[in-house]
Amino acid sequence: MLRVVIPALGTTLSQSALNAVTRSLSVDLKPDGIMALSLHPGWVKTDMGGASAPLSVQESATAIVRTLQSLGEKQNGAFLQFDGKELPW
Image 1 (cartoon, helix red, strand yellow):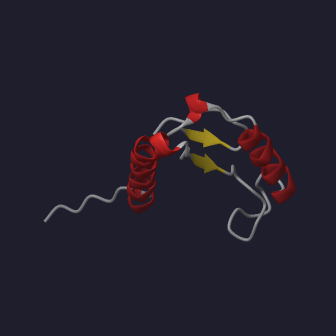
Image 2 (cartoon, rainbow, N blue to C red):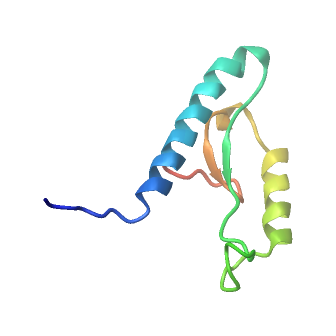
């Protein structure tokens, strides 16, 4: 039996599912004036991110707050990086 291993398949599938749910919520909640989007915090220096990560927690959090403050209807349902750049999914 041939076994194919796809690195990070679980993470890829769960992220795609989360993005799809976010997109669906953005449509369902729009009539109520509620936006939904996904934000990637970046590679952050944490126990999980490790010491090699380029962003401190403070840098990531500050950028996320700036991004949230600048959101418009165009970003409803989007998948954004911490600095507001749109990410593909």
